[in-house]
Image (cartoon, rainbow, N blue to C red; front, side):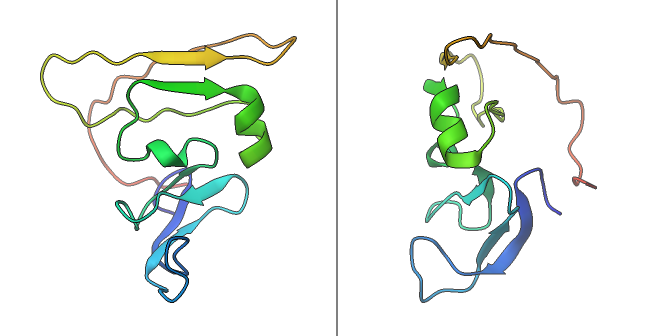
Length: 113
């Protein structure tokens, strides 16, 4: 497994071109291909349209649940350099609360499941 949402980097039918079989294979529970600009990656369904730019986005728990069957979202750090400003709008559904966990990346390796 490559990361939380990508089972394999290639070997599956591409969502943007059904004649191709060289795209990422996503986990069955909640993973969606990132698309043409990142064909070898998957992300959580409902935010997969932001694969290349996880900056300045709105996360709706209702939308995430409809797309991935999960009411939580995982935002991966955007690949931005230098001083930058990103905003995130978090919309809980009725009766839900927002919790934020922030992790500092110390080194990069492979996800070992």
